[in-house]
Length: 221
Image (cartoon, rainbow, N blue to C red; front, side, top):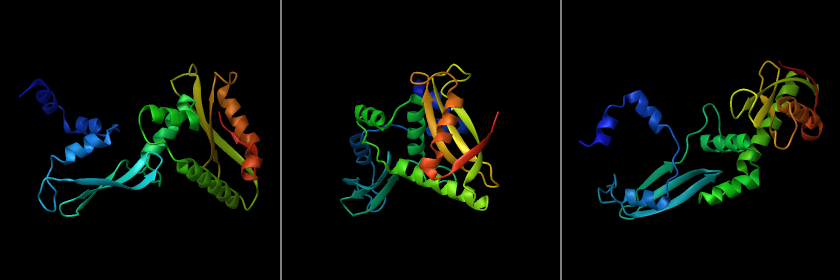
């Protein structure tokens, strides 16, 4: 047994689960090459066939691998869904990473192109906007139709403490069933100090144009 096999055998099950709970960038031809070394579960012949992309949303893909010998279809889902949500985890991570790094849509496209990844679609942003519009209307309904809302919020930073140059902030309703109503990001490279205060102010100022709603007060530390 070589040293790599020995080190793997010493990893406990919990650690192995952590090691496997990651995302990898794999060239599709390498995946096909691996499949051709396996046997089809249906016809028991060495697999030989072709892939077909059935669904694509952002970086998420649902790919079918069709055996040319018997027509058996094997499904591959490139990412799990976010727990208790409809979005795929890979898309949520892409948006979070882009926000923390200060990348807009054009920056994301350049990064994906350099990595030879298919460009992200706009579907994730559209779904996010629609979700927050629905959340605003739900908050208004909980306040008997009043379009003046009291909100709370929170911020996060790329690094701990207050030395990070990149930050994100979210605003959420203070109703019985609070939901996120708006999010934004900021960078010290393009704004002055007090990023969190500036981000809250930005979301307050655009509430009327974005949601036809006025934020009247903010509950926070």
